[in-house]
Length: 176
Image 1 (cartoon, rainbow, N blue to C red):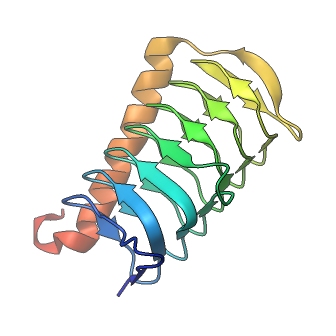
Image 2: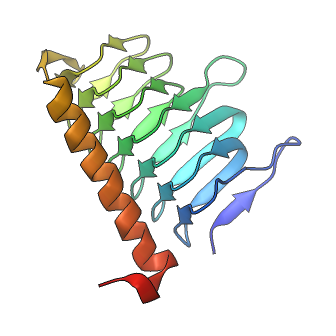
């Protein structure tokens, strides 16, 4: 069973048709939209500030989302994919963005709509990644523009795949 912990008067709010892996942890001021998935060993720590997550967001295995007390919050739009072992600390991630495996996104950074952060990248505090930009490296730097249609199709496909994977757990009778 997932560990859901109220703290400081805040109880996590989980949207309908959302999959929570049995060993994920969700704490405090977290509000999550519908059809999301939070995978194994993932931690969403809304104990010191708020975490807001849109619809059809997948937060993959081993990821950690946290904020700074009274300073930074996390906002994640719709159809966002957060890869395995990602750390997001007080950042804003817009719709259709993808954060690659093992990436770190620091306080007050912003990842634009349809943007891609390459696996293993470190996005420093206050970095602004524009829409449909690919960034990579440590520290992350602009690599190239990505075709908006291609980016949206890729990120929508990944989000839908994770919705399908989550249904294997929540609706096993409907799987292939």
